[in-house]
Length: 478
Image (cartoon, helix red, strand yellow):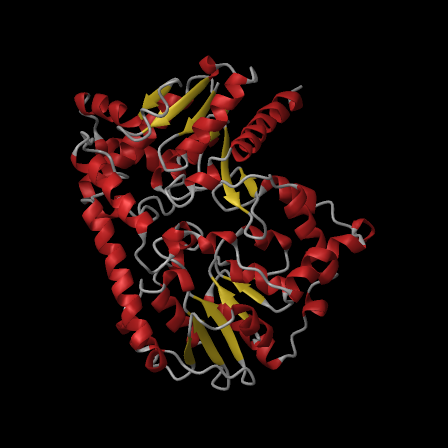
């Protein structure tokens, strides 16, 4: 028996893939359970056997669950690190509601995973329920499978944990030897260095700072679902369209203001001076909430990093083009108080900035991977898949960060001396990343992405990936 997560906006892709496997007689419908949330995707999943998480919560309400004693039990049985703060929706609710939701979510997955389940397929780890499902899956020895874009090409990797490990890629990379590295393996790196390309997700309409037809259509769809469809009291994901539109309008307004005062906000770049580059991250996103949970407050993180920078070196803070407008002018004004912090415009070429820097300091950004390509020190504070190349300078605390910074600034730090066979290892890691990822795009099926994500071939490749995971595990059993 396998379980499919149909809670979030990747649900249509999951449904399409599972229906494809059923139609091809590779899976039986009786061997699949889809988790739905209230009315979300319930209609689209009507041909599947589903279990409604919020209906289960209603049943728990009738049982008068002792929340306090359950929290005590959960605290002793599971690792609950970052269990509340990771969830951008749950954290805004009252404390009592958050505690009840946590307990109910544990009880839901404990009840579900008790039913002879072998695999649980979910989205990238982004919410409290993802962390809970992972903890409970470990207890019942269930394979917990999540999906992530590899950021280098429009392909997808699989992860069996919550630390952004790409397990199949890591296993392949462990077999590295100089004898295995071929001339052809260097070609993707050389191609990137000669002509750097930004990740495809940067072009998603949802990441823009302008109003267009997609957002107007999206508003009316959300309006209908929020006000004209009965919404469950425990539904966290169907949000008020006016609140979402208000957030978007504020972002657009702030972006206009930032553009108006652009030359007063952003500093001129001097590529001849010594500097480290810190890219700002989109927020709220799993890139900080999950992968760099100790540095969610980016302003504080930047100021603390600046305290470690020698006075003859600058810390360049580059605004994220897609995030323009999420930070107010007061955010920039606060950072400009520090003479060794320079604010760099979103218009500046990131790759050029990396090339001329002493190195980059980031939380979990794609910039860290691009830094490896451009052969500069990549200091990473968060958990991100390319740390497993063992070519980043993984930072566990600020004392370690200070040591890395001083080594780079004062001790003639050399990547080839610090990392044995740097070029060959990077070439092999990128080869493993490409060869052990899958040729489909795992993404939300919203108005600006649905046509691309729900293409017949994309669904087919996703269904093949799911089937391969199940088949490989079945064949590996003694």
